[in-house]
Amino acid sequence: MTKAELIDKMASSTGLSKADASRSLDSTLNSIRSALKKGQKVTLVGFGTFSVVKRKSRKGRNPRTGDVITIPAAKIPKFTSGKALKDAVK
Image: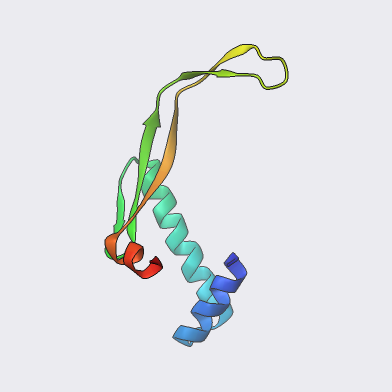
């Protein structure tokens, strides 16, 4: 499902216009993004939890040359699905 398809589905199920559904989805995603940027967790009960995880630096290989390189440490977003979502997918 693409973002456009999700907006269409939201608009049809809620009775909102596509423009309102698009603004609503964008607002939700921006709120999640800004909370993660601050290092906060976002928990949507029944759906899952978004969080930020620190990944340590590690050794890797350049696939072209085979040289060992150091991959720097990074913060990455993580999603853990909730029980209700896991049960719905089964």
